[in-house]
Image 1: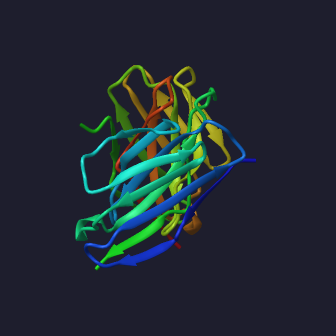
Image 2 (image 1 turned 90 degrees about the vertical axis):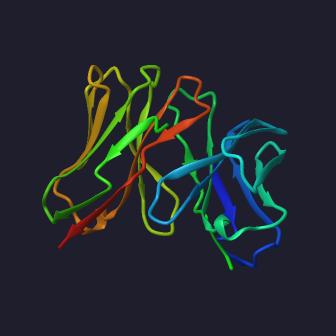
Image 3 (image 1 turned 30 degrees about the vertical axis):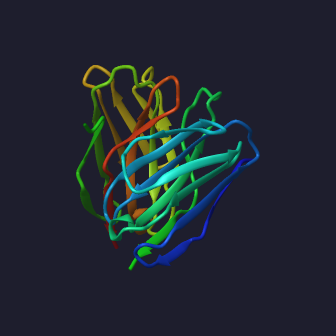
Length: 114
Length: 112
């Protein structure tokens, strides 16, 4: 069965510090990968999605970047965090070959920028 | 532009009552409509989903009603329980399946 791992679960970082959140998927190949951000009490904002290694689409211009160095690895980064980067970050994957297209989410990373 | 509009933003229901969450969409190319349930501090998890070729899908206490002509779909939770208290998201996806369009979420509280 497929599983998605996302870490760390919580993170407190000072303003101006770098960020690296990692997500890996097991049990499948060539997944579509996504990074979402969820502000407190708000909906899901798509930040990046990837259909293959090195292929990244950005949905919202911001202080963040994403990379996909391996087929099942997706990394969210920042060189210098802002206070506004605080939020709940979710990684997700979907199977581009499936007839029932749904996203499967990781458990999320709670990022607090102080 | 919000591709999928969801209401209400929050909902309080008595135990045993019916919870109803509504969503509407514009893009008739959407061909898959999943609902997600999210507990605090956790990622959303797929609850139930429907395709537009059926008008209703039921799984246990959860039912999706789909009105293709009105471009609306709704989640009904029968005999609501305190354990159903969570945030619910509707979503829609295109046949290519690369992107998902989520509603803004509904915070459901079921009072014992």
